[in-house]
Length: 194
Image 1 (spheres, one colour):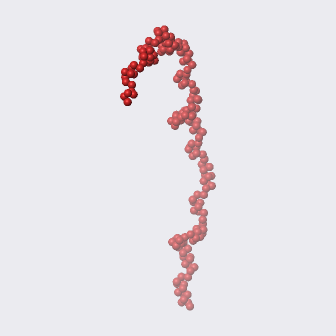
Image 2: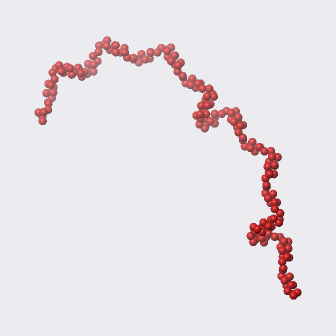
Image 3: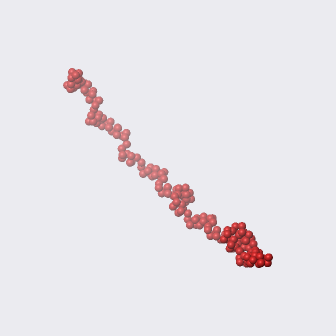
């Protein structure tokens, strides 16, 4: 097994000097790469690239002002909308607090005038109109006086329990009923006369 392996000295001697030079050129280190270009070539390559000072000086003051004029600054954005545009935008995108503060007192008064308030509802009828409406309605005293006493007695008889029937008649009515009926003394007298 050791015979099959190539030792270090065999590896070192495996390449000729020409082959070594070719390999070294392929694997050049940093110092070789730095020296690979002449000063003239370096200048040409650097001229093609833009450094930071070139970027700063690329626009003169006039060109910079022209470019800035074309762009909208923050104060232009603030003044870009009229008050009515702002009101329309606020209404579309307002929370409760913004809606409360969105109207002036005059606008709020105008809106309130268009709506019926509670005082308007209370004062909507005059006294005579109220009296007419009340006259059309049936009040409780009308209900009480609607029946005469005979009607009350008839209703009581139809819808009375025993205690109500006993209390329903006055003493005069009771006496009249008793007179109509034969009492004990009449029965006794009737038996004597026979």
